[in-house]
Amino acid sequence: MVVHSLYDELTLSQCTATRDRSTRAIYGVLGILSLSACDYLILITARERRGLIFGHIVYRATDFAILPIAPPPAPDHPAERHLLALVRTHLKTGAFWFSYGWDLTTRLQNQRPNDTRPLWEQATDRFFWNKYLHTRLIDMSHSDSSQDCSEYILPVLYGSFDIRPAAIHSNPFLFCLISRRSRFRAGTRYFARGIDSQGNVANFNETEQLVLVNPSTSQPPDVFSYSTYGDTVLVNLVNQVGYEMPVKDAFERAIEEVTDAPTLTVVDAAGSKMVSTSRVRLLTPSEPARHRADKLHGLSGPYNVVQSTIAKGVLEKQLRSVGILEEGEEIQDTEFMPIFRNVWADHADYVSNAYSGSGALKADFTRTGDAFDLMTGSWVARRTPLLSAALLIDKRPLLIRSMPHVAGFSIFMILAGLTLPRTSEYSLVYYHLIWFTFLILSILFIQAHGTAYVAWPRLNASAVRDVLEYDGPGTVPSNTVADGQEARESRWVM
Image 1 (cartoon, rainbow, N blue to C red):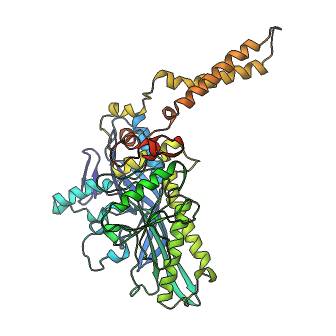
Image 2 (image 1 turned 180 degrees about the vertical axis):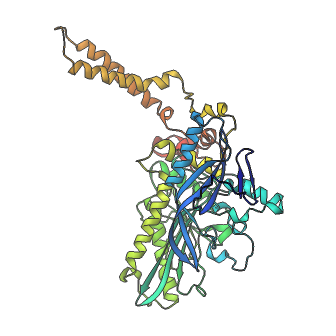
Image 3 (image 1 turned 180 degrees about the horizontal axis):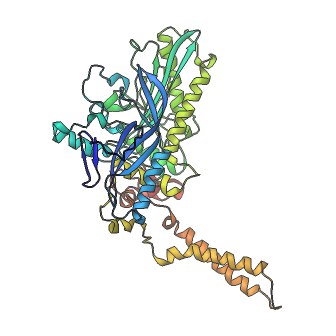
């Protein structure tokens, strides 16, 4: 592949020899991203081998290079720097996995060993994380057979992958856990909610647990979802009391109205189980291995605890079926249990970090979801830097913006009155009273207008507000909300 920076073009041709040529190891093309000034080619420049599945090596991408295809007309423009910072932070904090010969985006029972199509055409669309970034190369491949870029279109998985050798009673097997994050409605805590008209739920993760006793003959496992995977047990982790209760009740009513509704099990956040309707029953190890868990603040601790508990019961059933475990024996009593715990704990860390972000990183990058919108194509940058500069403009009223400064200046003046040397004997009572009044009033104002001080997403701000302020079908009437909570709190999910 040849990049013509002068003409902003990509072609498949032989590169002519030049004297000033340097080489660099490239392990894959993540894609091409268009920002406000120019297009950027994102390359995988470092990788880490993390396992071998069916003879194919699985890597984690650990470093990237972001190269402008053409010299940007305004490389130092604030909007361009902000967007590039989002991209770099997403690449630095994300968990990206790939294989040159195995489709990580597709669960095992859907793999087709004899499929001769390029790997990117076999990939599952919703888990093909960088598909938007490969739009340009895909279009080139479809429009001109002589410019088939399939060798450069590398499907990348966002999620987690872990495969470890294990043994129980000297019976060896491979234990593998894969989580796949959907690129549709991906976001972060509070700002990605609900379901869209195409049925894409926010922050959907598919978790696949594999037990490979003999990779050539092992039974394909089952994972989660209704129309795609068959009959499903829904595990509702919404709290039974408080402001989450209307969401739980609305969810159960919606399931009741579904034809051939799946079984619904209600589990509170603490892990205790309770029956609430005739269709709600306790989860037992004899249930099918397909489960779908939902939680108001999903992908958190209780979510992973319930999911791993279900996986443990299914795993024990599978190991008994192949004779590794005796009837009535549990993995809790075997040397395999530490491996099981560690794999699921690492899985929880990968998923939770992507969802809630890290406190050590700037909230604008990790908690608003702007980077997800940019990398998945939910928001497309305007090619005019001046128009994109509107992203950096604070459009809040002057009074809203000034109150934190008033509070800070009031604290400074109070401390100055207490610590600086005095040149007169006049009392400072009125001085402190005035500044304490300013401080209290500014704090009360900030509390009363709290949502105005939230670090809202900048790229898709209108879409986020449409979700949070939705008042259409499926919402809970305000008179059904417990403890006087406003109805909008219960509309965040439904």
